[in-house]
Image 1 (tube, helix red, strand yellow):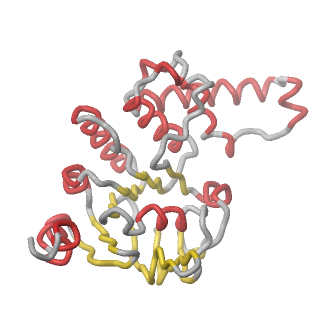
Image 2 (cartoon, rainbow, N blue to C red):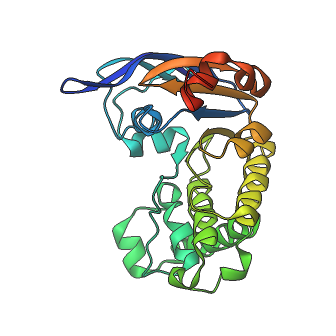
Image 3 (cartoon, rainbow, N blue to C red):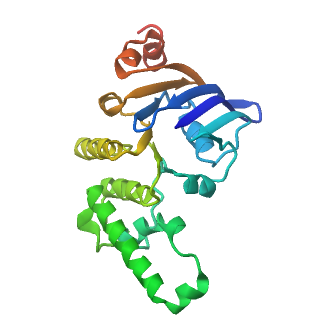
Length: 251
């Protein structure tokens, strides 16, 4: 469903991503790993429309979406989370999730101002769906709480719930386990697996190798902006180039 073809991005003389190609099968968990500075987040930003590629194609469901805006991609079924939390702390947890539904709601200004019955029904349905997503993501106990009352690990799962509220076909998760303890990481692992089992394709950037190896159907390894290796968890774990990139050639 997602195919990256010779994708490159340069910032002046810095080649952050260089000729990267890979494909993601529908319903799979596809991980992108690599040492710090390998180009993982830049790759995510290219795929999700935050950056425009210098060259290459991004094929999503048969359409070249390279250079499209994030909102245009969201309408086509692509959603994401960010490496650093992007939660509105001055809003309730439920309202944060409802924000993810805005593309599917009635945008008629006058109907909203008048609070017509159809608008009220849509709003209630949106609240119900947001609450169900919070339960799905394991943060149901915060349905009536403000976001600033939630722990860091719960906020990570709240952000995933908001991304799911857009009803994506593919969700890109940028380091969902970053900063989490062992228990919270296990909760993220369980959630990612549930998302894939529900039929949503997952593309994951993560530094926690145990999490990656436990979850991934396929792994892409980047190093200095280039594709170093790809394959199953067993193939990547045994690849000498990957071992050298992470541990040094001497190791």
